[in-house]
Image (cartoon, rainbow, N blue to C red; front, side, top):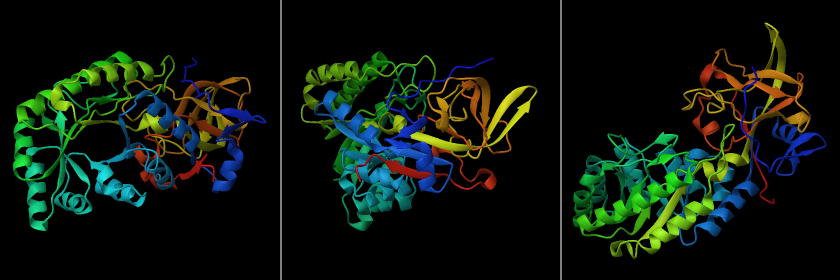
Length: 412
């Protein structure tokens, strides 16, 4: 039985029957890169997303959560058009610095930071988003011993979450952040210790497509930030509202109504409590900026039949695209948008299953999807591959060669 798949982003068109990415044919890109599997990222699509954000969210800082995609050439151009980079490890911190980001524009979140990571961040001048009182004391001790003034923000575990979000990061017992009721005392501790207190990071969830749910969460975040500041007796320099903006991966999903979210946020900020009057506000986004700009290209190496069912076997798979295989948070596997890149725009002729080269039944990139008939040598394109593709996949599994990456659309 044919299974539906998500919609291919409208920006992708055909050139002489072949998928074009950033105005260049997929087969030519694969040849230039030296083969497949290959991730191609179109920076022009990312740039337009940033412009869309700037137009809608006037006066709100835009941070890029680099966990979505840490490809160095992409980071170097994104860094120039956003206001900050958010990282979640020392490795990501060094990648952000290498991309040219000012340390003062980098924030470092994540539970389980080691003393070595805290020391490296404090020495670099990066803002640490503290996840616990214990982490705060370790950071203060390290800063004191090294004769430095640490830049410290508090990640808050709010008492709410984003309704319908893909991954819930707040509400209830969580490994992330300091429970809201304990935050005011920690703020006072940081201020009394003469740390450079940078404010709050309040992240309630990710991959939300419901504008009303995001509006509700943002309003609750502003109210919570004000209440915590009042109780602490100190106004936060910055309130990071988190992100959570989703993109439509699957059949039936619709894009997030950005204009509606922005209009409501501006209303909420115009009416914010006085204690937040001089606070700055930021939104931290990953997949919404880069997800739709990426395409994973993989070549068909075998075509086989099993019990009358066609299987297209490719040279890539879940070790590069764990999310598209359905093994990155999906409860029921659903199909990402896929196509035969070298027959782009051709009419579907058969129901086929696209499987990777790994020796596991989990390695599926397209399950019972309608496609143009494809042969050995054709290229398969998996869309929405710009976020949590290579960065979230087990590349070392079974020892296959790593995927290649390429950036197009920079104008160079």
